[in-house]
Amino acid sequence: DEPVQRGLKYLRTLRAPDPRGTYQTGLMIMALAAAKDGKRDHTLIQSLVLKLENSQVKTGPDAGGWGYGPGMAIGGAGTADRSNSQYAVLALRDAVHAGVPVSINTWKLIKQYWSTQQSSDGGWGYQSKVGASRGSMTVAGIATMVIVNSMLGDELEINPDGTPNCCVNKDDDESIERAIRWMANHFSVGHNPGVNSWLLYYLYGLERAGRLSGTRFFGKHDWYREGAAFLVERQSVRDGSWQGVGQEGDPVLGSSFVLLFLSKGLAPVLINKLEYNSDAQANRKPDTLPNWNHHQNDILNLTDALSGSPDWPKLLTWQTVNLDLAIQGAGVSVLRQAPVLFLSGQDDPGFDEKETAMLKQYVEQGGFIFAVDNCNGAGFDRGFRELIKKMYPQGEVQLKRLTAEHPVFRCEYLLDAESVELYGVDVGCRTSIIYCPDDLACLWDKWMRFPSKDRSVKATSMITRAIRIGTNVIAYATGREPPNKLDQEELANNDGMQNQIERGFLQIAKIRHTGTWDAAPRALSNLLKALNQKAGMIASTKTPSLPASDPN
View: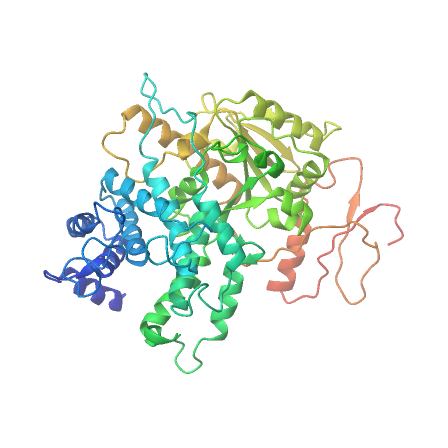
């Protein structure tokens, strides 16, 4: 694209002292990393990373943060603020993903800075812990803590045989959850909470926080839907741009923030990570991880590994969904916001009757469950097998070891069915549940696109293998084509439906019989939707099931 090439040429021909300061240096790194122009910019990115690392505050109360940078007229030496600091962190993350290493000590100082300066209410202000929390700085803190925790995951606990030990006791870093609660209590898309300025800057930060932390809702607010609706209404009908107030009145700056929000926030949600047993979480021991989240970066990293791979969308995302809230509120539609539901744990998940019924309903409506046992937990293995029996008490389907003939072993990578232990449940004409008793999530949690040179060959090999297994399962479940984030699927809920023909509509029913009469539960409703959308027909998407003797 010619404008992009002109912009890259300008950046590549800059000479010292440009780029000046933290913002310019960070944004230049992000632009060059986004270009993905092979190794062409590798040396330049390296020099810019070194510039950022050298300008990080190393001592004093602001150690680990960034100010405006050396030579800038604003900001004193040795002081930092959350805004400059977040752009440095975003740039360093992109540099790592582009294959440029960043010192582990840099990441440790970043975590120290953000952890120690979080306000008592869970938010972050612009500087120190004294100022009031702001929305823009709190979303910056959420994204930063997710990034830094992922980067520090490269420090592996290694067993004597060179394999990773992922099941050492870990502290539960509550800083992210505290910040998410602050956002839930102060959420807005019409203003920057805590300060009446930099709205568009805040909204782009909101997108990063939601996407990187896997948060679809802050409290009851769907941040993308509300933000997108707000922004689309305010687009200029004259030239298509966006303008804020103050410095955001520049349409180039304002439009940049908005387009980044709209485009990145629309990334398809590939996997829902299931949060369950909230009551048990509240009563767990202090500083321990909840059963559903032993490996906090597992799905984040698996999704990152798939993003941009051949035949996959360029950007994919994930989110957590709370089973208790789904039961109390919107029901199975919450689970169906992604094509794959990921379930893991070490102890028995202990699903009750309502939870079991909802998981069964999710599968019957076309959902796919991918379950992984953490830390060789006998309790989870036993509990998951019991869950399948409770979902199908008549034994109509069973959890069985998948054999080499199953497409999951070859749909992306060629896997050895003997050494890769996968179990499946066939519901209708496909496998709708896959369970792995080996702790793949432990290894996903340690994945990095460019691991450090200190990582052992054995550990790297194990992590690569685990990513490939996860890739195959997700490819099998989705065909590499996750649905658009905003698609609202009509639920196939026939409870209480009158089996009557709707006047003026094409309506097709299913005939119940003693065979496998409902092998593909959503096939007919999807066909009827396609007739409406593609062929211009008027078809009811209700698909009642009738006995052959029914007068209709």
